[in-house]
Length: 180
Image 1 (cartoon, one colour):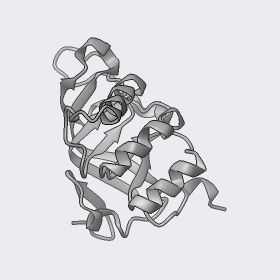
Image 2: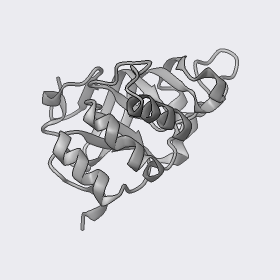
Image 3: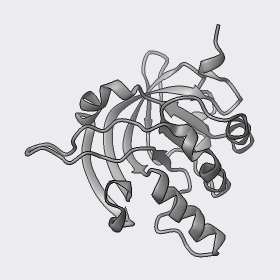
Image 4: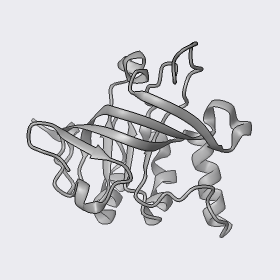
C-alpha cells in the first residue's frame, strides 16, 4: 500500500488506506478521481435532496475541485489546477454522508467541514494552484461523466498517475494550516 519513504495510494480508496495519513504528508495518487466544481456539486446535492440516484457512485472516491483546461494536441490535459475549496464546504457535507472519502483542492476549509471529515474518517488533500501545467503531465485521460451542458463545470473522470498532493486535514482532525 504505502511505505515510509513514498506514500502512494491507488483509487478507489479504502478507510484503511487513509487512516494513518497525517497532515503534512506528501502522497502520490494513481487511478481515477472525479473532477467537479461548484455547479456539478450543486447538481449532485440536488439529486440527493430529490432522492434521485447520482450519475456516479461516489463511495470511496476522491473529488478534485477542478475545471480542466482544453488539452493541447498530443496531451491528455491542459493545465489542471485546483480551485478554492471553501466554496464547496456546504455541498461536500451530503457527499461525505454518502461515503465520499477524500477531496483535493486548495486553501483552508470551514470548521464544520473539518469536523465532518473527522466524523466520516475522510481526508482533504491540497495541491498548489501554481503548478497546474506540471499537474497536467500527471493526467492520463479525462472523460466527461455527467452534466456535459456545464462545460468545464461538468463532472469528470480523471485518470492520474503519481499525482502529488499534501494531506491538509487528516481523518483524525490533524490540520496542516495550524502547524507551528
